[in-house]
Length: 116
Image (cartoon, rainbow, N blue to C red; front, side, top):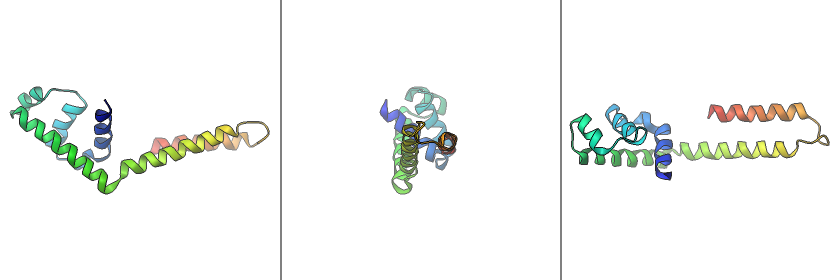
């Protein structure tokens, strides 16, 4: 299951760098959970050709991540924002004051996460 999630995330970040043909096959395999045989029949190629294409796409997407690191940066930023939200939540008591400002900061954190 973790591999499928990883494939989906890599595709979300770098899928547009694949060719249309690669995207079609990869989406059918990963997102639509079609078998190699089903995809091969639709495309008029062998199961081995579909398997090789999916593996090649996996390697390409992993290579893009290795070079560009967008997914890692995304996860790092998201984790830091969650830490800020936790700290703001810990300060949620009358002794700290600034309740409205804390609430606004939490909303801004949520907005930043949505932008990512």
